[in-house]
Each structure stands twice: as structure tokens, then as C-alpha cells.
Image 1 (tube, rainbow, N blue to C red):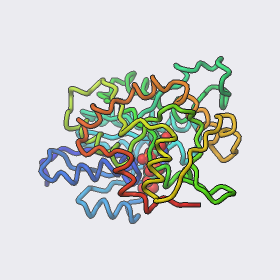
Image 2: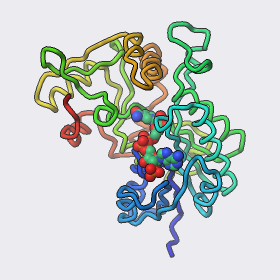
Image 3: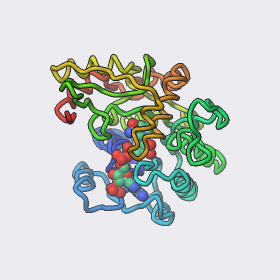
Image 4: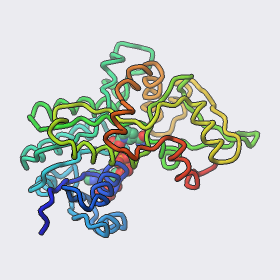
Length: 316
Ligand SMILES: NC(=O)c1ccc[n+]([C@@H]2O[C@H](COP(=O)([O-])OP(=O)(O)OC[C@H]3O[C@@H](n4cnc5c(N)ncnc54)[C@H](OP(=O)(O)O)[C@@H]3O)[C@@H](O)[C@H]2O)c1
């Protein structure tokens, strides 16, 4: 029996939650231990977390009663939803509500809600610079997370609102890595103009979240925006070229062209990059690099992340 306080982590086998579980378990002298929530306790990823000493508990964000049991007895909870699993904003909102109600019922003392901006506050639906999607969103996977902030507030959940950033890991896992053009040379394609994009190593999100739990009650009710660096498309291409040892160009396109790529979610991401481009000051300004580093002294720059991860970037 441990006297450590339990942090229950949704998405524990994923990028954000996994980083948090590893950060908690790496600090063996620290005040917390991790409870990893997963739909499949027998998966290799769950077993890897168990091997670090984390408790593994079955839970599904679509099953409110599983969440209630999973959060019982926890001091802290990391709440994140998984838009790209289903790409349905209303379903994501219902999942956020399930999480908020469960942590409320379990009387969890400190909750982190992994959120993003409701971009409709920057670009009202009447603003025609980008299409309105599904009748009521500009960037569905951002807007619902921002909207869900209100659920945590409304229920009186002691919450820190953690505003995350674009994962550099998207160059590995999300099909955004450098691609070969007809002339055989590599390019990354983004509709960012010359604006800077707030980015972060996905692993650092969990480490920053761990810093939030360690700071504790001073951060309850606060919004904390995190990023590792703000970089232009040209800067990211230059760093990729250096890491990969071959030229990588920044292929700058318009958001219209990006939306037209037609893969599932291209319209959502085209609008997202357009918000990042047109509201660079607000989007970067909402993510403080010094505050991120004070939460996580190991915060990586893009070049540090590339040194560790360049071998995983698929070159197509
Ligand atoms: N990619 C980016 O640049 C970026 C940036 C900021 C924010 N985000 C947001 O990050 C969120 C996803 O977080 P992530 O990247 O950490 O996720 P992830 O790496 O895709 O992993 C998600 C994990 O969540 C679990 N999961 C999926 N559906 C679940 C369900 N119904 N109930 C319980 N667990 C479920 C899965 O674990 P099991 O199979 O073990 O249950 C999976 O391992 C998205 O909403 C996205 O919008 C992404």
C-alpha cells in the first residue's frame, strides 16, 4: 500500500497521458503515483506502463460508470478527449462532460483539462475568411475543447485548463512529414505563410502536466498555455534539413488548397492553420515558453526533439 497520492490519467497509452504517466513514475521520490486509464489493460502499451509501476484500470470515456470507478480515490486527474478517433465534435463534447461529471462525483482535488481555444471567439461564424464546418464550428477539434472548459467551470471542478500546442510528432505520426516532390526533393507543406506556429514535443505535454500537479492548488482555476518553441514553416524545414542531412523545402500553400486536400479532417486542419497564421500573436501569446520551462525544466526545442526522433520520420 502506497501513501502516495494517485493521479488518474485518461489517454494513458497515448501521447499526452503517456508522457504524464512516465513523468510521474520517473520521479520515484515524488508525491504521486499514476493510475493509467485504458480500454484495453492487456495491450502492450498498457503493460509497458504497468512495468513502470503504474496501476492499470479499465475505463472508456464513452462509458460514464467506468470513469466514475476509475477516478474513485484519486487526488488528481488528467482529462483529455480523442477527437481523431471519431472526428465527431458533439461526441467529443459528450466525452468531456462524462469526464467532468466523473471527476466531480469522485471529488478529485485537482483536475487538468487538456484544452484548446474556442476559435469562434477569434473568428465568428459570420467571418467568411474560412468556411463554417458542420454548421457551427470553425475548427471543430479546437472549438469543442474550448466549449468544454465551461462544463468544468459550471460543475465547479477544481480545474487547471492546459492549453496544448501542435505536436512536432505530427511529422512522424500524422502524415505531415517531409514528402518527395516530382523532382525528388523533400518538402513540408503547410498553409502558415511566414507566421510562427507554437509547437511542442508531445512527451513534454505530460511533463508540463506533471509540473502543474506538483504546483498544485495555486494553478486551480488558471489557464496555462504550453509550447516548446514558436517556429515558421521555413525554420522547421531548415531544422528538418539539418537533422535529415538533405535539403527540405517549406512548400507554402494557401489554407484553401490545404482544405481541398480532401483527406478526413483536411477542412478542420486547414482552418486550424489559418487561425494559427492569421492570429499568430494571440495563438503564440497564449502559450508561454518560460512558464512551460518552469513547469518542465527538460522542455525540448525542435532541434533537440529532432536529434532524438529524426530516425522515426517517414520519408515518402
Ligand atoms: N496532434 C496534435 O498536434 C495535437 C495537439 C494538441 C492537442 N491534440 C489533441 O490531443 C487529443 C488526443 O490526445 P493524444 O494525442 O494524447 O491521444 P493519442 O496519442 O491518439 O492516444 C489516445 C489514447 O486514448 C485512448 N482512447 C481512445 N479512445 C478512448 C476512449 N473512448 N476511452 C478511453 N480511452 C480512449 C487510447 O488508449 P486505449 O486504446 O489504451 O484505450 C489511445 O492510446 C485529441 O483530441 C487532439 O485534438 C492533438
